[in-house]
Image (cartoon, rainbow, N blue to C red; front, side, top):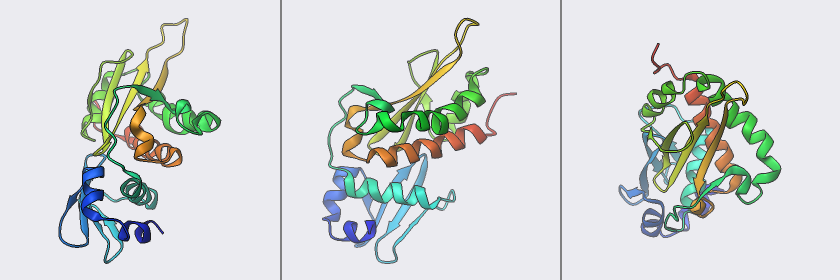
Length: 192
């Protein structure tokens, strides 16, 4: 269905709104979590030569392309529970997207910087340790840790520009964050 919808849109407009590049009549290219991805509308494929994409990754990319409306980033950050419909799913989001990162980096937050760099991430100035990850051309996510001190447990969050709903539905934001969390929690690019 996403391919059907995408094929009915003005592809030049899609590229402008989504920050994608048009390579030929029916092929688009964009960066997804630090890897180049080709979307072939004729053959209905979403592929990366650098990394295997899951079916959910491919769906998120397609939904991004059909949802993107070119809204400019506001600079106002929101947590997941502040997104449309996010409050009801927030406990599951925390369990699936935040908890794995906390488990992996809560006692060694400096390793988060190294792992995020493998995704094209950069240090950010939030909490006690934070990184920004450019998930899609117009979607930046901030993974933030607040380190516990004995009286308080280590906590974490993912923050989004308030424009994110102009690029992805809340369900896809959750899936995307789970993909990033899975990569970060399994990453071997850490200091020993």
